[in-house]
Amino acid sequence: MLNPGTLIEETFDVLVAGAGVAGICAALAAARQGARTVLLEPRPFIGGNAATGLCIHTFKTKDGRQVVHGLAQEIVDRLVEQGGAVGHVPLPDGYVHSITPVDADLFRMETTAMLARAGVTILYNTALVDADARDGRVHRVLVCSKSQLGYLKAKTFVDATGDADLAHRAGAPLRTGWPGTGAMQPVSMMMRAVSVDTRKACAALAEKPPAFARKKGVAEPIPVYFHGTFTRWNKVLREAGVYDHDDHQFWTNTVWPDQLNFNGSRMANIDGSNPLALSRATVALTEQLQKLGAFLRQHVDGFQSASFLPNAFVGVRETRNVHGLYELSENDIRIGARFTDAIGQGCFPVDIHHPDGKSQEHIDIGGDGAYDIPYRSLVPRRTENLLVAGRCISVSTYAHGATRNMAPCMTTGEAAGVAAALSAQSDVACAELPLGKLQDALLAAGVYLGEPLEQRRAA
Ligand SMILES: Cc1cc2nc3c(=O)[nH]c(=O)nc-3n(C[C@H](O)[C@H](O)[C@H](O)COP(=O)(O)OP(=O)(O)OC[C@H]3O[C@@H](n4cnc5c(N)ncnc54)[C@H](O)[C@@H]3O)c2cc1C
Image 1 (cartoon, rainbow, N blue to C red):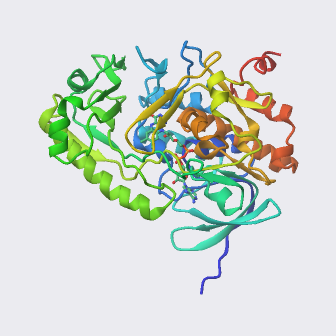
Image 2: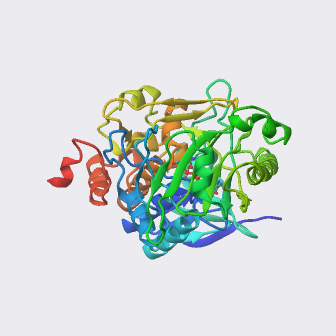
Image 3: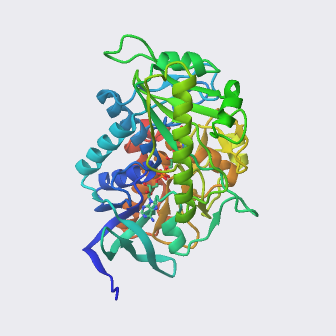
């Protein structure tokens, strides 16, 4: 019965699958290079996990040197102008130098406008379901839009689906979960609390010095980030059936004086690339957060008048990662490695929520506190016209604990977008792209590539 036709006749230069932070930056970067670009997103809004209310981690090394610039910084600057961000706020006594909270809705609106201005064709409600790939080349992809299946054609493709759906369908080699076990970090659902007295809530809950920021039009500094555990309330939380374990950790962030984004739920043994498992988690975590909201309103100062809005979807930390021309390793992060094919730097430490759902592990970055991300980690093996960006790039399990955060996802997105555009325009396989050309284009776009490559910008 089904005989899918072509959804749009045009052959795009670049097709980006997935409009999380990586896909947004990839599509923007490709379009700004002059590529005719289409961006697919199954949800009726862009942002991916950034739509759930999180800080962008992170722009500065532990000693305060900013190494993430480019589109990530441009987006923060635009959000600051609109009141949707407060810049990079120092975190006293923190595991990072500074945190960068952003309002999820303003992030969505601003980046939507940026994509439209750049001329990107955004296809909402459209999921990639298959790829027509032969001999390492993707010819077209099959998508499912609101009521029809259809093909889309492009010269170069960027997989920014988080789950490496496109690479998977194209037959690229990849790893699912942890080697040997297939285990994955737990999933969590974010929750927005509104009508909160955030200063009182912070005084009641913060266990380490919080980050405060001043905002135009707001009299008092806002506690924009704090962290703690619910140890004091272990008994009541167990009795209320919120958690089946003690000492649950939580993180909050905001850019408003009366709202908090709450990261305080968790479910282990969920494969975030499996729709049945994700649906089960959506139901369970919504219920967990409703109970958590009731607990906060009843027991914690600052929340007495609050309303609680569990997010509409579950946040996924880890699923598939491609095997690329280079796999960034735990050791590369530990030593702050340098690569001649750097396309940007990351400076957020390894942050692993263990698959058992019970513990968390941090590993600091060595050297000067930043590591290079090599272009080869964006190029899946045995492919010609496919790149990956964001959560699913080629990294080991522990390195993924660092690169899965939003600043590196934006950096790899921007680089993949520029590379895809150059590859499409010059008809050169992604792996064969002249490195100098790519790095010059990134430097011209304002991306920081670390020393000594950075000296090229000055030359
Ligand atoms: C609970 C939680 C808290 C976190 N906290 C932080 C934090 O404080 N700071 C930080 O920096 N990072 C944090 N992270 C990590 C970070 O948010 C994500 O790893 C990052 O946003 C991933 O970006 P991405 O663009 O690669 O993928 P995603 O944000 O997952 O975006 C992928 C997009 O692709 C779309 N897609 C999926 N399948 C398909 C398909 N088949 N076809 C087309 N499109 C598809 C999805 O709908 C989605 O929009 C957190 C993660 C979680 C889960």
